[in-house]
Length: 253
Image (cartoon, rainbow, N blue to C red):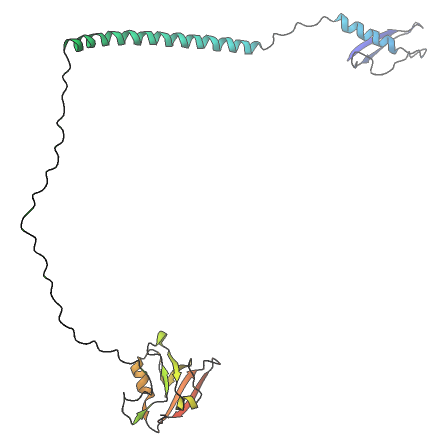
């Protein structure tokens, strides 16, 4: 912001403050007395004030940077001088130490010692006596292996007293999981007529639970005198329901 003083042709002096833009009046100005446009006179006054002010001397650019560069160069030269002095000292020490060693090595020839070559491994003596061979025995003819006994079944003939019969249903002798699972039902047997089929699981015989019993005890419960009654509780393979079936033991083939 600068102060402008303008004297109009009408003899009126007026003063005002203005902020020039690019060395010119930011807006038009007129004489407050006669109204004459004084914008051009204001521009001339601005130019006169700008040219009358002496420019300030420019500050040295990057003075601090220049000093840093000079300091770095001086430091580098000092390090190089120290390195050169250390190298000259080391070289003089090396020449002093190596000289007597060279003379002594020239006076006394080196003696080369040759290490003995490794001897070849000697072969082990071969014994002329042959090693004893293991005696080979001729196996005697073994006794004939008996055929495995037939699987446990209920109602098979020739294994029990003919006067005792079962219901004509075969079950799995392995009893996997402790269950007595029917694997086959013989035609014309009491089990077949009572509707028992393969896949049914027996739960009890005459109110005796079967779970955990060995297959022989299960078979003993199924067998009985001809004409005797038997009640079997089972889980049906088709419906999954539990039911009790009453039968009469009889010969079926």
